[in-house]
Length: 484
Image 1: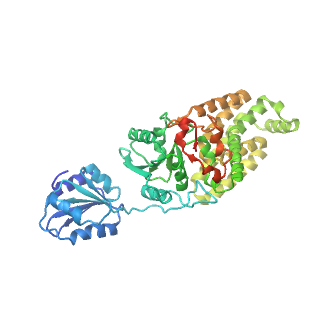
Image 2: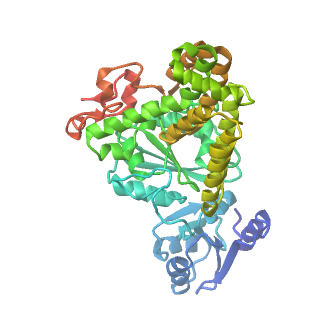
Image 3: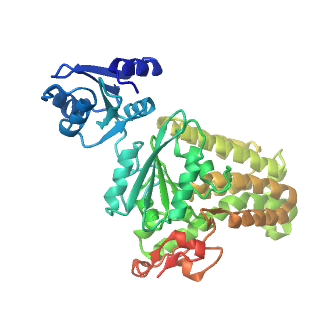
């Protein structure tokens, strides 16, 4: 940067094309020296700016100091803000000002000072709608990165909790924050995530999902991911205690967690608030619902078309009669119903809430009554798809994967029958068992199987027993989740 205040201001106005929200407040100090305060409209708190910066500058006694000497004196003796940082480049000036800082520039100094007076508007802390609980905290992450950091610190008041901030995206310059417990997470895993984020060449980051392909071991968009997502501070804190690493992305309430295991999709905060026996029942129901949502339509098609002898005679005759009165082949009929269901789900999700009931009523009338009465679709087929659809909502974190796999099993079951279902199941299982993130196998602790590691999978032991073990996911690289 230049020593001249005018040259610095002119250059910044040129770079920002004199944007309407780029503001420069020029002042004359008591010693007749010129200075300027650079801010971005709406990103800083004007009251804090006046109290912490402007008033102290105008009310101070500066004698005849000039240039660098004046700059150092102001920093050391006048400004009352707690968060300050020296700025040496124009890029840093723009980045700080657009992040809510007020940048102080003084004539005769080639340095500037970024002063923390952030005051931008953000959504208040509220319960996340995607992760509702009966017993537990009602707080959820917001879009503001600093607020999310506070929610975590309130729950883990430990000096081992580390926050590392950085920017990503060559155009958006989005702030991200790496959070982990230094005594739990391994340094190699933290360093590996740093390298993957530094190697990320994306231009714009508007959500946490943008970073997932760059954090995967394979670097690709795969069906199953080893990067988890949560909107609950208590969930993230629980994972941090197990040696996980969180990635907070400014502008989104979804925080990434690495590594993420398959069995964690069936766990919720309520499991640890309720009695162990009830948590076990709920988890078993979730696993059954998952398999039903993925396999049931495909198995239904395979048995009706290729293995009718597996049905009781009365049941098969009813199914056969229903199919004979519909114009479409069974596999195509299931695909059509599944397609209509996904359209209804998407429309209900995107439409305003006041219109959601109308979509439900129209869907029930068109599919539930008219289509069956007109003989376009069969009642047994509709029931098979409906059961699968209802079960898919039991494990919402796996809904995208369930949708893709259900469609695959429908096609394979309609073409190859039950043997095709078995073959595709084996392929999916091998793929899931071979997947890993940061050296941790995705299907752990189911495979490699260890009885000691199954304390919190299908059945959750009581806290008196779980508390005797130090749970650290990083130890899974050695094959053990629980260390005594």
